[in-house]
Image (cartoon, rainbow, N blue to C red; front, side, top):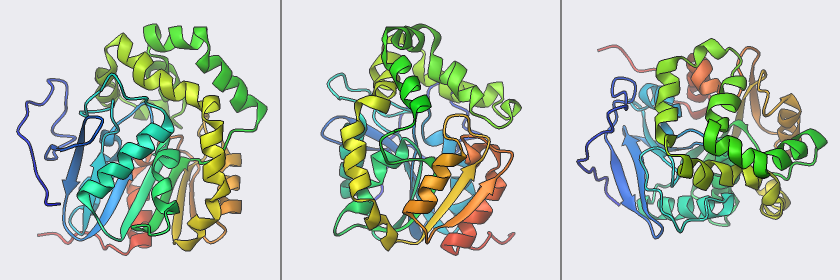
Length: 301
């Protein structure tokens, strides 16, 4: 599929200086998915989690696009993508949409970069028998049922009536969980935070999209178990794990789980970063990616 762009008015809140990329859209069965497709060379597919969108990868895209083709979709319901009413917004529904997206664009031998819910949503691409994936990059993510009591308790609270109320009326995941998961909250500036908050000004959308994934922490255990049962297939690929060690959502014990699942992986830990290492310390993450993928820094003109 050739790249296409669509003229559309940017929302007034979108910071085009921070996100200076061409808007592209592809029509999927469930709705129109927005994505950026920048640069030329070996493809890199970036898949975000919740409650963000492809904006979280802007530093990596800007740094790597001189030597690589950087593809970053917005999951349905997030960012500039459509928010279809009939879509389920569960991890497996998102996974099917991402698989359709990849089939439509047809990139070959790409590096897959996943963060947060991007793991259980996009790692199925690497589990396929005839996978297009060439390498894996994992940023504070997972792909197994949560068995620890603390995370299960969080999942029950989030899925219950109080959790739904907090998501709807307080925008809980963006206003409370997100700042709390940064290693240094000051790095989530009001200007950056706005790029995420504005996407979910609508209270119904917070329940429809964000709370659906909160419910899935415990509610999609069967789906995660199926992923885990095939996790050894990931050992086929070179893997890089970059982990923010101050992540209050995904603590270092989850990194230990990845070390067991992917003993061949290169691991880079960031002592001062939290859940979004690529937002908090982008230069370090870019350097790690360049070393892993083999793309040199751009030379000055």
